[in-house]
Length: 343
Image 1 (cartoon, rainbow, N blue to C red):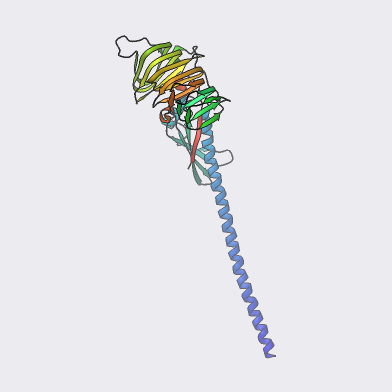
Image 2 (cartoon, rainbow, N blue to C red):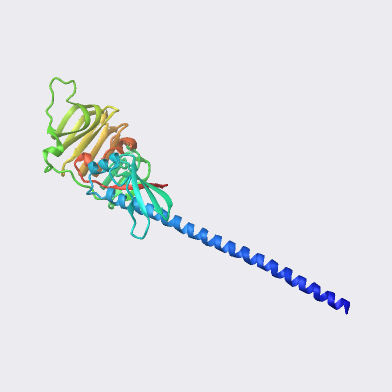
């Protein structure tokens, strides 16, 4: 009888202990579950704040990328921070965001701060303005590398099904197939878009001498010169608008400036200078261009058909090319590329 009574007391104590342990475990599980719920809810709010901030960036990026938006308008926004820098904009599904900028109109950085249920997240996006001179050579018809001593130092773009007709020369870079429409500079452009006609100065040691500051545009009907020299000095960009060019000579551009030869309508260019130099960019998407000379240091060509032969070469300077934009040449904007997302 005594042993049975002791077993019953032991069992009761064990039951009480088990119940106590289960109660503790249950309470711990409830605390853990509540903590998980709070954590999940907070993570959801953080995600929502992020997407609110990103939506602010997207809205502003779409406005900047619109080719109808002018550089002047973008410059006003970016340099003056004239958007809602200090003012919150409500997001339709809850939350709010505000925007500010860094960079400039060519490489603007959009910064957005999003807020949702007192949680804030930051998102940024770097945009980069597109240029026609993204490659050393771009052709919309045929590229001819007709002799072994012809070279392209840089990448080549074949636009809209263009082909390489002869590969005897060497491309020191990659070849890309791209799809892009090229606007043609036309003789119907107003004079305000092309600048004034420039006569030859008989007192200059050069046939054409330009000392430029900022963006300068000049108009020359035809350049048909033999053993002539064009010299560009100063600080800025010179745009030369010409119909047909047959040039045997040199074009020198000082290091602080850039020269772009813009071939109008269906004009053509024949450039034969032997060992001379042409330090500049050529834009003629409807032009047939023949180059039988070196384009040393600074060079890029957009052409319908480009023929390189007799030692003809092009050497690409991407840093200079990246700072030339369609608006500079009187053409429509190509918009922007989205480069880097950040926070």
